[in-house]
Length: 226
Image (cartoon, rainbow, N blue to C red; front, side, top):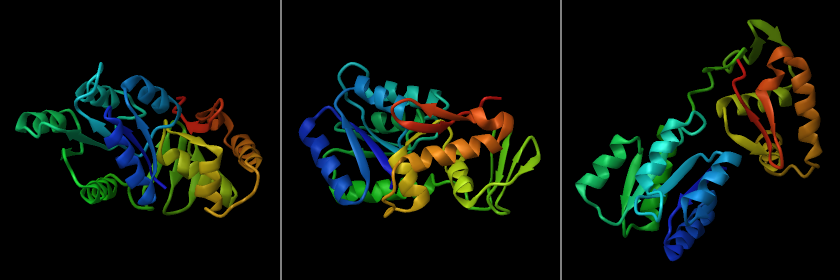
C-alpha cells in the first residue's frame, strides 16, 4: 500500500483528496501547513507527495526544493497542484523537479489516474536489479546478500525485510507496515515478531548491522553508515 502525503491548506479540498485516496486503496495523510508536513516526513518518508503551490508561510516551490535537496526525499515523486494554471507555475514546478502537476479545479478520478501513472514511472527497477547501501549488496535476481563482498546467509523473511529497507533508504517503516509487506496483509501476529527478526538480521550483517537504524516510537529504516 502506497503512502501519500497531501500538503494543501484548503481544508475542504484536503479532506476530499484524502477521502478519495482512501477509497482508492491508498494510505494518505493530510497537512495544512509545512511545519506538520516536515515533522511527518522526518518520521516516515511517503511514496508520493501531492503539493499545493499556494501555501501560507513556506510555499510549495520552496517545499519542493527542500524535498529534492535532501537525500531521503530526493527521489520521492511529487505532483504539484495549483489554482493559477499559468505556464509559469507549470514550468517552475517541473524545473524544480516536480513529476507532474494538476490545475485546480481537477477531478478526483483524474488525480487518481495521474498518481497511478507517476507511481508506475517512478517504481523501483525490476527484480533483477542489484541494490547497494554502504557495505551491503543485495542481488534480487540471484537472491543473494553480501557484506563487503562476503556472502551472508539469511532466512526468507530476513531477506525480504532487508530488500524492503534497501529499496527505500532513508524511509522509516513502522512495525505494522513491515508485517503487512513482509508477512502479508492478513498477518495477525504481534509486532514483536518484527523486532525478533530485525535482531537476528543485524546479528548476521556484521559491520553493516548499524545500517538498520531504530526510529524511536516508529520502527526501523535503512541508512548508509559508510
